[in-house]
Image 1 (tube, rainbow, N blue to C red):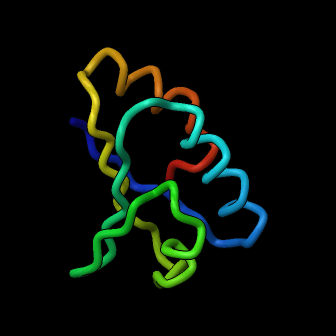
Image 2: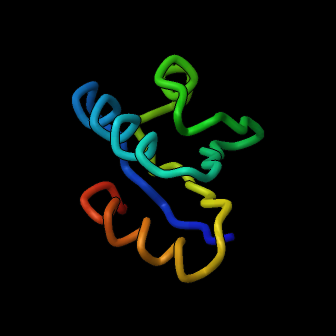
Image 3: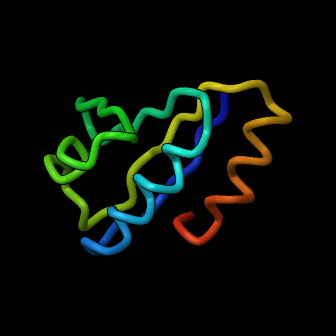
Length: 77
């Protein structure tokens, strides 16, 4: 499991982020304050405060998580 901060400050970014994380066969959580949202849920993401970076938790082994982080680097805060 790895954690990184992501910035999803536009509608287009949210759409492409959900499409990109949905390609991977593991679980992702977005954590903003006390809220934990499935990162593959576009509706859930829009319920968060998107003006600030959000913590992304990747539930995969370290090697796979590193590969995922590389694929998602355009979203990193």
